[in-house]
Length: 393
Ligand code: GLA
Image (cartoon, rainbow, N blue to C red; front, side, top):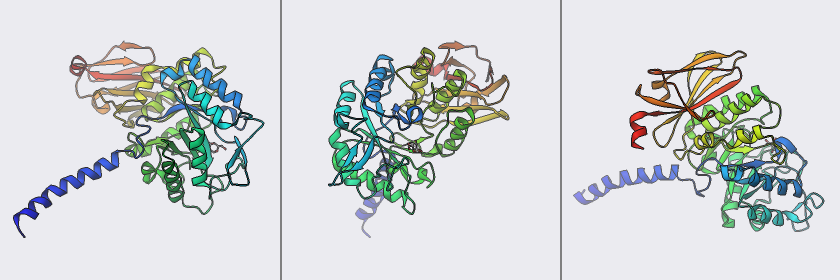
């Protein structure tokens, strides 16, 4: 062999490796580079969706400050559709959506928001409405013509179908329209989506449906956290939508819920009635410091790093500027002290500042440890920054 091909071969190896790494990390549609934020009708309204609900929600998204806090997708879940016409085009409920879906999408866009819709990979949706099976291209074209920016695709009535194949097919149909559309895969973690969904969807459910109860929220957290290594910009584990403000948990529990979702770089899709929410709920949903952790551009999913006692946990997430978000979670029935050891959360100096992201103030720090009393069913969320780093940034 001559010297030239050998040199060429040596150059090709790292180049091809770089190409591989680049491909893996670059989401195909360049969407959802941080976890999607928005609102979805299902958790509060179930099938009770309508034009006036969606318009009112878009208005409230703006007037409540949620849009400016980062929430942008307004998504109609199941039950907006009733049938197909003689050409196979999906038909919206004309009583509930008298102006049609395009006019509604235009309204949502006019508020500086994005518009999302729901379908199902099978023959019917979970509520028995027409599914997209066999109509993928046609539905994708219809959605694009309406101005849809986000599609959640469910997995009911899909018996015998191959999830990876069906979701890839729909992804391709969306891409063919030329409109940038986020794909939210919703097969509840039943076909190991963490193994294939990052190349197809921008987010994929890892669990069954969340319920507005503390144990359900924790169970979704625990399941989703097993797949932290696959999350990256453009591709996120989805432990399901938020229940904040729906009434089944205390405000402490809701603060823990959104803190833990932010730690997991989970999509923040509110699921309450934005038009009538309390000021306490509004403040929980729009906390800029918590949202900042969720939306951090590093895109790492936080993990459980310490469990000093059963039901007392320390979760940590590295952030782009070198600081770390930490949640001290008390899952137990009584208040208790939780200590986080700085090296275990990724901070390798005793000289660090600790900022409480709910109280919005600096906290006292103690050597190489950080201890605080956490009420029952609650979380304390902080950002820890090595002081040298703080003076440099
Ligand atoms: C499934 C999904 C839910 C919701 C309903 C609608 O249960 O997981 O999030 O979309 O269907 O029927």
